[in-house]
Length: 207
Image (spheres, rainbow, N blue to C red):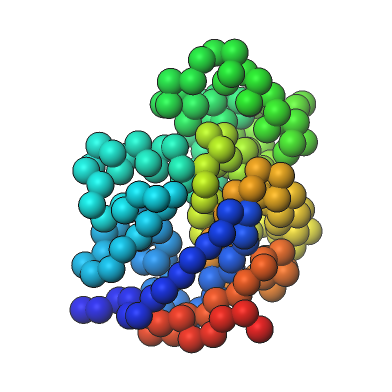
């Protein structure tokens, strides 16, 4: 069964792209290909000069740690780690030095406005706070691309808009590309481009 057909997509550094479409149209599959979770049967997925499809499993895992950040609808924070430790984790996996980790985590905790919640456990955080920590964690290693799957889908309207404003500000500051699957009009509003998918094809580009 062919899921995606004739997809051609280039995303520049710092560009934010919204991906819209009905359930089952291929949005999640496309996001998984961009994130190296799935391999395409045909075609090339190139990230920062590297072909994800031809990378060895070991190298692919390293590329994903170094160059990709991911944000999910349901946060996926590790419940046994506090806020600071959740943000630290990607940097520990990349063997950053202790001083560099501390400086980067301090920077991001400040950027998401949660200094007072740095030692809190995920169970003690609100939904909006959990997503802010998830944003900080996704950006910790200074990835080239941030992939977001319905990042405001589990938040109320006001909290969701606050998280989107944060995403906009941080991706601009970090020059990180953002590809976001969403149904929220407010999410579309922070993006440079809107792509609509039907039956595995991109049928509409920028308005």
